[in-house]
Image (cartoon, rainbow, N blue to C red; front, side):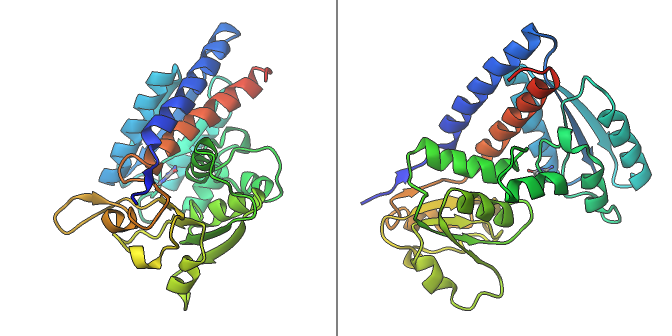
Length: 285
Ligand code: GUN
C-alpha cells in the first residue's frame, strides 16, 4: 500500500491564514506586525529562502524590512544594525539568515538579537526556555514538524521517534520537542553504529542529515511516519530530500514530500512567531 503524502503546502496555508487573521487584529489595535530580515553574503539558497519569507509576510499582512550585505560585511556592521532593530519599537521580529559569510561568528550575531524579537528561536534564552517547557519562540522547522504531526492526528505520545541528524537548527530542537510531546526519542548521527536497526524501531522518523536519499525503504518499519527535512539535489539537478521517497512511499504509512513538505511549514511558523511577538508587544493575547 502507498503511504499518505503529507501536504505541507496545505497545512502551511492553514497556519498562514490563522496568522493573517491575528495580524489584522494587530493592525486594528495599533500597527501591522513587522519582521526585519538580514541577508549577508551570496549564498544562492539563502537568497531564495529570504525571498520566500518576504512573500509570506506580504500574504499575511506582515510588514517586512530587508537589509542586504555583501560577503565582505563586518561583524560590527551587523551588530550595529541588530542593536538599532532591537531598540526599534515597531520591529517585532529580527532574523539573520544563516549561513553567514566565513569570518563572521554566527553565535555572536544570533546572541545579539533580543530574545523578545528572536522569531527564529535560536537565542540561548529561547533554547533554554524550550528545553524547560516554558513559553518562548520555538525554532520554526522543528515547531513546523510537530504542527504537521498534530494536524494529521498522528499520535506522538508513547511512540518511538528516531531523529537522524543533530544540528542546532533541526536535529537537537526537534528531539526536544518530540520528547516534550512524550515520545521516546533516539538521536542518530554520523558516529551512530547501528543506524539501520535503530531507524527500524521508529514509529516516527525525522531525517535531517543533508545527504540525498540517505534513508532507504529497507530501513523503515512498515507503516511508520517519515518526516523529510532534507533539501538536496540529485546528480541531474533535481530537488530531493534525505529520504528515497519513490521507494519509501511503499513502506511508510505517511510521508512528507520534497518539495512541498517541511519547507513551507518553516515559513508558516515564522509568520506565526512574528505575529506572536507583535501581540505581546501590543499587550494583547
Ligand atoms: N538557514 C537555514 N534555515 C534557517 C532558519 O530557519 N533561519 C535562519 N535564520 N537561517 C536559516
